[in-house]
Image 1 (tube, rainbow, N blue to C red):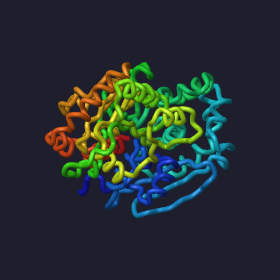
Image 2: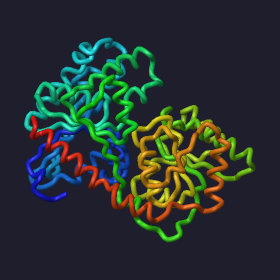
Image 3: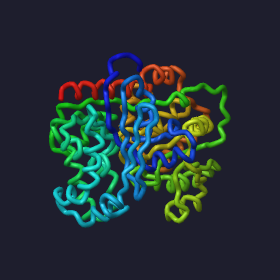
Length: 399
């Protein structure tokens, strides 16, 4: 990543409070594994020389500013700027895009001041923070690169209809012919174009990378976890499937237990049901511990209804552990490229998935080493971030 190409590039990007809160608990920001969080962490690793990065996030009440080398961090308080610690209070009231812009105007104004000196704005995701940053970039006439880490309308289906309507207005406002879009999969690009109702001329698919911790070899790892699920307890991840899978395993007379790694509210009804069904709930892990966890598992299941990509299953196969994935995951494109498309599985029959998992466990199936070597060669985060920076530089020069 060294060299003169990006020496003078000044980038503004958004990050999230939850990312850094977890990082503080694990004492190492660069080891936190997540979508937008991982992208930001890897981007930080590549900032050096005369390149600089402004990272902007929102917090319910905290205002902070700090500098670490070439990275400047800005934390903006929601209560002070928009008068509430919960953006849902705005979504409930606003019915038009103008009303949204008026409600978030103080936050947008602060972001606009922060990005005055940058060359390009790199947005991560389509929730309210990158949306506000987009408005700030428009005010300051800054070129914008939007890196899709999720599709908002897919994530909000649990919310009341009126709130969904407001958030969909926000989502569609991300359509702008001047923006360059980076998608983690062709599936995501097709889906977003359908949402926008327009073909995106300035776009590219850049697959997410794999941190090196997952590619470290381990001789004959102990398989202590038969079946595992790693992910957020949200509807789009389809954790409800684990109930059916646990039942199917019992009906087969299997003693295999499912381990679920998630941030779990003990009062959540699904978590209580899963525990009753024998599912073992584990706390989220940093990258090193998560890599060891994958190696200790016989098979990972990812039954998501939709995912723009799907870091978890690719990380799993990088450690040598098979991962069964749903057809609604963008990472399926990578699985086919790697020659392991056979792991793409319909999650409509828990018994069928239980039998497939049991076969993997019984035969001690592992991912071929040549697949792992191809991941190492073609899917590093360094390569992905290098392409992000190339795109950012081209957009900055064209502005």
